[in-house]
Length: 436
Image (cartoon, rainbow, N blue to C red; front, side, top):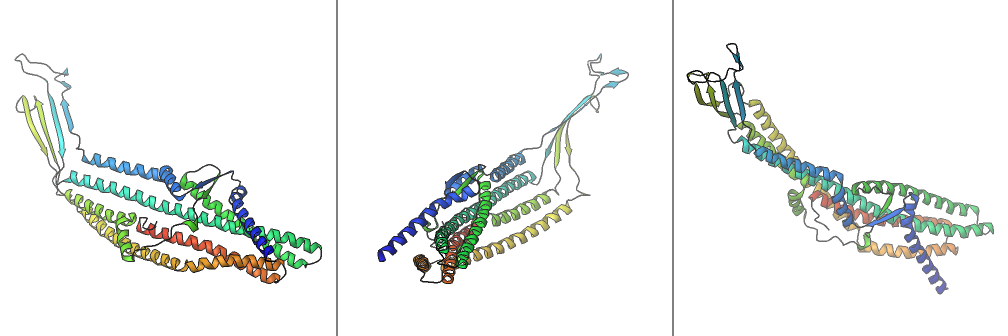
């Protein structure tokens, strides 16, 4: 008897492994997908950084802003003014020499150069540099958000595939049980209601599998968009929850907050925005000082001497417009951005604290005791299944245990997903992979 039980358990394990093997392909086949790509998280991130169009567009914006720094360093072009007589005293283009050797035509030449005062040019260069830095931080924030979405989709698909394996394993058990019950029903050994109860459970499980496959398809679509994969393929994560490095050495909440202030691109973006507004205020104040326009000029035959050479100086008088409105607006913009930065600091602290506390709660729940429980629960499930087939327990007892076991296995893989998502949320809030 003991030998038969051992052989039965061995056959169940072989069946479970076989179903796990074919379940990966079953998802793809049911979705009409013809090929499967097995990819690690590192490989996915490498492809994401190399091929994502949103990142490429953000890179172009950084390059565009860096080009504006060079533009801000350039001087204004000089202006050339020409004035030449066309007709005079009934003559067209009366140019030449008089009998005494003097010129009888007139023309005026002037070159003017704008000279910015009060350090305006240097202030514009500083503002352009700050604007380029803002573009770099915006790129980093785009990378941070998309990478978080990538990792969330990746781990979610991994969890859904594990859940699919559970469903497929249970489906195989029910189909095998139903086949045996059908023979018993035809022989008149069991009631039809018992057969229909198992058949209803199988149909419900098939419906759950269908809904799960729809969810997998949605996540696959998001992941393939991030990775710029257009082929009709199924992306299978090659990672394994059970083989992932345990989370340890979590630093204190205060250290995490200080780290976030250094690396969180959104918070740093607000800080640089404040600097930009302060630089703009300084520039607006400099605009109160008028710029100079200098230009040497030469005039022939229209001044008090035949050949006149002079130097022109142009200087606007700041009487009607001293740029007060723009200065006042810039002052309010500085105060507004300072308020945004203070709010971003509070938001950063709360987000990191929240992610930190959720990770601790998840770690507390996910412990070695539960792992041992699930291992024992698997053995108990095999015994219950065997007991029902041998009519040692009732159908109601089997159905209750079957549903409880399925739910517990799904909760187990959900816990594994929650642990990874909690880790990634903390990394996302701090702006750096502080937990590997």
